Image (cartoon, rainbow over all chains, first blue to last red; front, side, top):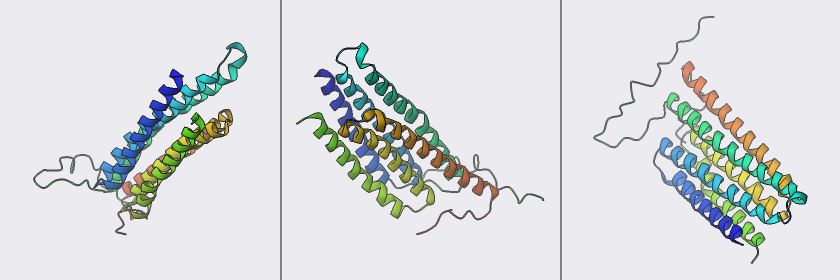
Amino acid sequence: MIVTILSILLIVTGLVFFLGAAVGLMRFPDFYCRMHAAGKGDTLSSLLVVSGFALYQLNDIRDFPSDWPVLLVILKLLAVVTFIYLTSPTSTSALADAGWEDGIDPVIEPGHENHLEDDCRKPPVSSPQP
Amino acid sequence: MTFEHFAIGTGIVLLFLMIPAMLRIVKGPTALDRIVAVNVIGTKTAVLLVVIGVVFERVEMFVDFALAYALLNFTGSIAAARYLHRAAQRGGDAPTGEEEA
């Protein structure tokens, strides 16, 4: 019973973070802001929801040695969690790098300078010699 | 109210939270906005597959689907990012730059 309540709590928290990611993806003014909201919100909320379902699977273990396939399911769910935890920030970083190289400018408030303007963006390579 | 009802409600909420990402795909001013929104929808789909497995009480089968879907999603977004990165570094007109749609 306490396991079910904990898993419901985890899943509801995850859905709240999913809502935050969706609102941020919709309303932020800038590509980088939207990517920030989408990357962080999606990673954390996927972790919370899948962990909640993995925790709920503990209810199916009634006597241990004969119910070992449930333990395998829990391990697979934790593998999904680990995979999302590793890959979602990686793809977010790669997409932000591609956006920067592609020339998408961040929205800077008037009165502030874009300090990264001349430092990081590589000059376009001239056409390669055959 | 059993846990299955709660799982069905979770799935419906996930489905409705895909709508803003879909709107961002339609609206997004650059191609990378659309790719980010597709990435978000893919992650939500991987979670939704686990929810479907809990509803149908076949988690041991659907969790493999979720893992494969997360892998494909990651590969797709990495490929798109590498493509746009190279296209920008070549300095040519990438077919998907800033397009004022």
